[in-house]
Amino acid sequence: MTGPRSYPAGMRRSNRVFLAVLALLLLLPFWSRTAGGQTLAVFPLLDLTIGPNGINTVLTEHIRRETEARGFELIPEEDIMRFMILHRIRSMGRLTSHQIAVAGEKLGADLVLQGTVCQLRGEPAPTVSLSLQLLRTSDQTPIWAHTEGLYYAELLTLLGLSDPENMDDLYRVFFSRLLEDMPGRTMHGKTEGDIPDIETVVLRPDYVRPGEIIDCRIRFYSIPSDPESLSLIARVNDEEYPLALDADKFYFAASWPAQEREGEYTVTLVETWPTGQSRSGVIGTYFVDNREPEVVLHVRGKDLDGRTAFSRELIMAPQLIDPEPINRWEIQAINREGEVIVHQGVSGHIPQQITWRGQTSKGTIAPDGEYKIVFRVWDRTGRESATETEVSFLRMPPDISIQVSRVNGSVLVDLKNSGTTPVAYWWMKLFDANGRQLELVEGEVLPAVIQLEIPEAEDESENILEGLLHVSDVMANQTTMVIKNLLQLEKEEETEEINLEVEWVEEF
Image 1 (tube, one colour):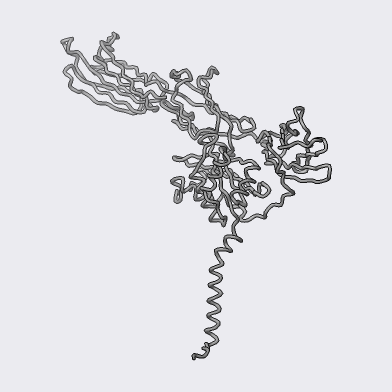
Image 2 (cartoon, rainbow, N blue to C red; image 1 turned 90 degrees about the horizontal axis):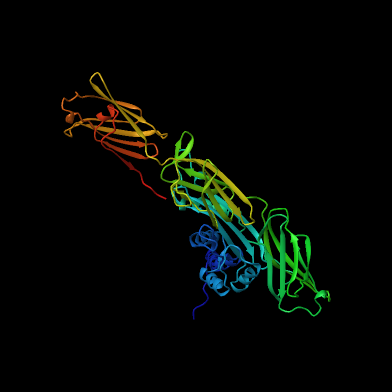
């Protein structure tokens, strides 16, 4: 029989330490799951740059990765999609209180994160703007909200040592700023009670101006035989608004003016029965907006005497100073006489880029001249903001006048620009009657004089000087002139044939 073994004291202590470390390693995943992060359901982001019901899966995935890195335990994406299909959730960005509560029950989510993509632009100047809201499912209370925008120009450095080159470079800075103050853990909310017998809640509008009337209507599955004995109060902050049965005895209704201070307001319904029993629950939220949207319009064209000019297309990029969802927008082009020649309006968020190719709303090409571009936006509460800029449309090709004279046996060809747009480059080739090139002259400014030594021929049929002239102005408009006999201009007679070919691309 083998007797009990004895071990040195140091070895026994080492074994105890090993077992303690092993136990710690086995419990660590459990602790990190239960103590560090709460369960979070990240719903797909509403992308207003796509449409009123657009979804941005790329940015949603970024949000999922960033929140998981901050210690939240994420509800699987496929579970959220099944939940949305089952409960027919088609509109993102603003879940109802009922949907949030059901998400907590069916998905097992402590928190819900929803958001809206307000602006998103890729190359050449990346821009991104998101609005996020974190809500607690136990009482449907918003516990954190933040809107952040980041523009390419904000990250440009003097020497360009770390300038962003693509959207991923922008995201690397953006998400750290967006989620910087997002809480890592929140306390579970305590509800005073739920109201399970509510069938329908109508709380509108979702977005209001200060003083605008809020309409609240509630329908129950069953109405008490004595409705007057039931006290219903809609509570917003410290203010209370009694609800009464409407004339059709269908809804309990109340209305009140929206608060002056901007922000999101939670509406709580408080029931009090004749027995003294009372219960309450959140029935919805609304947002008070007391500021009109601020918008600027960036235009890209040719700088001509301090004014933006274009000949083929004018690139315009609207930008919100403080990004927010926009209900609709419109753009106008107005001529010097005050006539609106272009008018286009669209519901939904502002576009990343607008291109005007000089065409009117009737489909014709606008005449050369000065125009005022006016861009307007309306937010969700109907507040309007506008910005305007002046541009010059210069589409006509260069208008060149030619005069020919003889001085001391030399032929002088005088070229002048009769148009208003400066010339950028020109060249002229001169040929004799046999097609032999006599001279090639080029330049960057007009007027200019070309001097050519050619004797006057005795035979009138050989007294010919052909010319080929090409002129391009600073707006890239071009003119090509083929002149069969320049010497006829000296005699102030009509040329036999002057063919004008205007080289420009007509686009819209």
